[in-house]
Length: 267
Image (cartoon, rainbow, N blue to C red; front, side, top):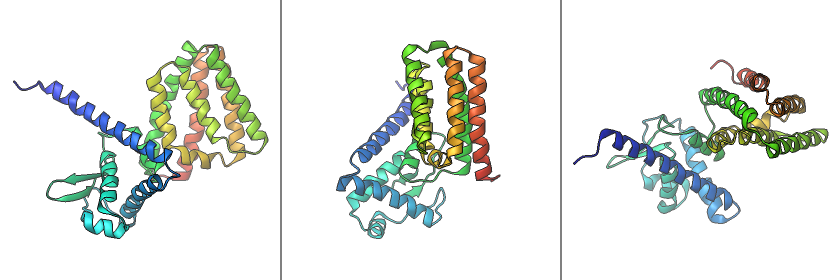
């Protein structure tokens, strides 16, 4: 007896999740072994293939050279090449068609924000649309995050947020870039929601935007403004003032969105 359609759909969805998990585990392994020859070589090969796609302006549906030819171009063995191609296929950048070859397959609706984050981490440049759409979704998530933080935060959450505010002020006084502390503060707000899925989801968005956030906070003035807005957010969460917290996070993200709209233009 054939399984019902709904069961097949669930199995398919779970397989996609497993693929993303395996890809994430592999990328983490490469990062952890970055100082070893094997780890750095694997990571470098994935980046080289992505660079090859960009240099040759390959679009979705375009076919890559054969494994033999591609391995020669990259100056690597076919086994090493296959390993990198498997990762890129799992990330839904490439797809292997039986008896046909390897084709470009850009991130699709079946992929996840984790896929975009991992691609950004290994050197892929996100599109303007991906950046804008990620900001839209992050705004929705952070508005809910601060609401839940106001309702569920405990003393330990407040202590964590207060410590991050103090650390940020100290770093600013030394003229430093606060992008890491800024990320930690937002994730600490999410942790105060006591919703682990929300924390993991927002973490993927921050991984996706890590390089851009570093550039954003190269300007010390923007760091000072962000720190002041963090203090306002902390005050609202401390008082469990949902309306004020949502207004503060909305203004906070809007300022960043306006900056990136100016940088990216109207394309």
